[in-house]
Length: 149
Ligand code: RB5
Image (cartoon, rainbow, N blue to C red; front, side):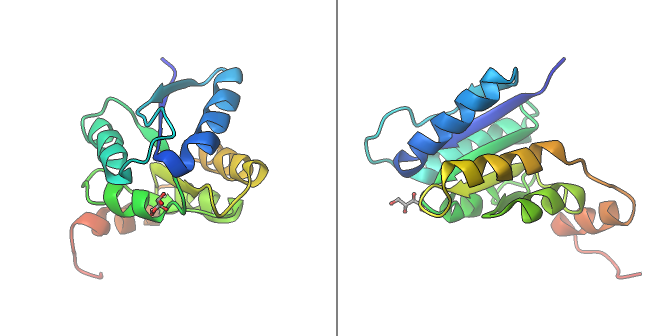
């Protein structure tokens, strides 16, 4: 079964989110929209938490969140134990966040990057796989402090 990718934004990220979702759908990805769907001013945590709950429950595995900077979305999403959200403004960090940190939520700032760069970032994130190995132990320590040895 193919993966369902969650997408959400606030009003500031609406246009970029819709552009990204349209492109990813065109390529055959299954995209689930968590809102917002209008340009009315709204609160980014409402949408970050909705997506994070879906990740915590296993309904979706990965998601893209868009707000003005990506920052608020990432702070809210990272309050959930099963979420490792990253804000990225370039592709290298997005790729490494998958490979080394097993990040499962990508946050993008619509007021920070243009649509072309945002798509590059999304492609880097979706195209990279977690490398496991030594990184798995480190990722495990994110939620549970452990001995350094
Ligand atoms: C909305 O004005 C803005 O604060 C929000 O989109 C986001 O950038 C917050 O982190």
